[in-house]
Image (cartoon, rainbow, N blue to C red; front, top):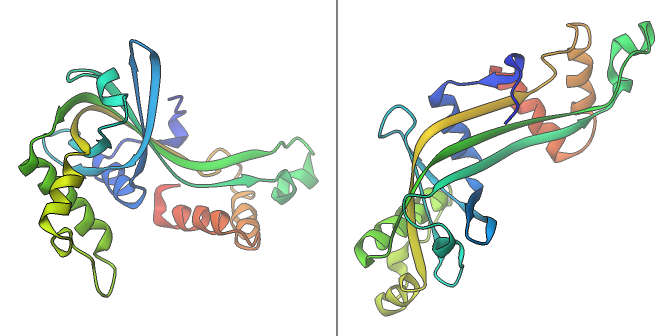
Length: 211
């Protein structure tokens, strides 16, 4: 990923937290049939240092896991808040007119080596943890144990789990850092009044101090 110094974020805890907040990834590999991509939620763990591990599962019917056997290098792409930035917001538009549109966004690219597994105990542990993670905010969280055991075993036979041991993490927070200081408040105000959920999320991402 092209990351100019102004937009670079390389603090591993920050990148891990971004993944937790934006868990739906695009998993990309290259195999016998060429490039292959799947979209799926992933969990992140800090170990092993320095970059940690991602874990998730694919449908057994998805040929992706056969196209990318254990040991394959993979890329997981996580994207976050994004919004169009009109040059009409810039104070420098009135001063020089030398402005153009752009797009603000945040993204993390995670690279590593795949390892697949399909034993029932490991798959049950994985789906239990995935479910608990995403049900945690609900007043009455659903649990895997709420479903009949025979049904759960059948569902586990229909998936293949994997771990991606990370070898590299790249973070890009493109949040108008390259604009003159006079322009940035105008961008924030413009986004606040844009009336779109995505725009509000970009403002929130800036306010976390990463932009």
